[in-house]
Image (cartoon, rainbow, N blue to C red; front, side, top):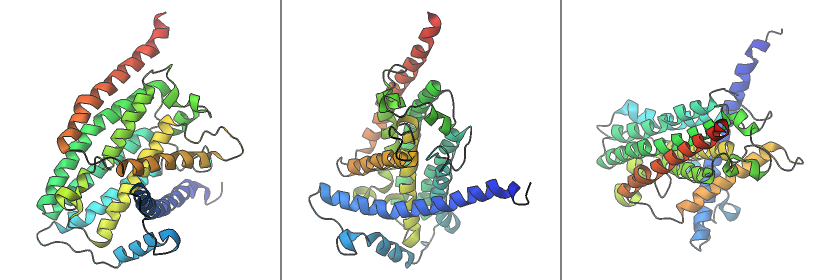
Amino acid sequence: MSFFEPYLPAVRLLIFLVGTVAFVGLNAAYLVWVERKGAGRFQRRPGPMEVGPQGLLQPLADGLKLMSKQLIVPPGADATLFRLAPAMVIAPALMCLATIPYSESLLAPRNLNIGLIMVFAFGSINVMAIMLGGWASRNKYAIISAARVVSQNVAYEIPMLLVVITILMVTGTMNLNDIVKQQGPYFWDWNLFRVWENPLMPVTFVIFFICMLAETNRAPFDMAEAESELVAGAFTEYAGMGFGVFFMGEYANILVGCSLATVLFLGGWQSPIGLFPGVWWFFLKLYALVFTVVWIRWTFPRTQFYGLLNLSWKILIPISLVTLLLTAVVMKLPLLF
């Protein structure tokens, strides 16, 4: 055994974490560009055009502008929690991305037997960070927004976890790599279309996607930043990179949610054509879901807060319970005969 061999796993994890930070930063920059250009196309206007060809350098200009601004702590705010909240938003998302298997061997940062639990454990810190940011600001609009975010995330965690339990019953594992390997390369082998195991499996995917939109505070569920009602919501008092890190955290959480949907329902890296590496298929599925998230934001208006909660408690939770029970019945039927 060489001197460096015991340290190789730690070094490998560090390299992947650095790569994940770069990946999140690049996505946060250019998904903003995609969002702004997409919004322009949906609204019959060109979007950013001035900085670089087709506005491609606009994200760099915006990043430099944010980094040049001072992070001001408002009078009366809790300075420690105010500065800590942005870090608490971005750090859990980075840890979640470090467990996502982008391919079978090339880009698989950490193969954990309980990887699915780890994603949800770290993902739940996001709501705590937004709550702390709003509460520490000592701003009435930020505090109202923080209260909304907590009630929203509690409501939508329940149907999302019920859907995930349904997938766990079908696959029998919490290892994300094993969940992908149990699915085939063709779309009829993906969990999304395996209706012989659960006739309502496409419905479970829709429930998961809706809950993912709510968990990441995206329109039409963007109650954390309801500009028409609460100025900038929980981020009202943040300036410069304080606001920028919250913004990066939102896009990082979108990547986590869409990556998890790709793993659980769309076959992950499984490729129907062997000419292209599986990692390309993973990112193709991932960015198709990300584009859908952008598409939904600029298509549907923001829902009323009570309508948002009623959607979860009165519709999504009962339907997800039905899909869970139906899956249990379908799995037990062969044992009864």
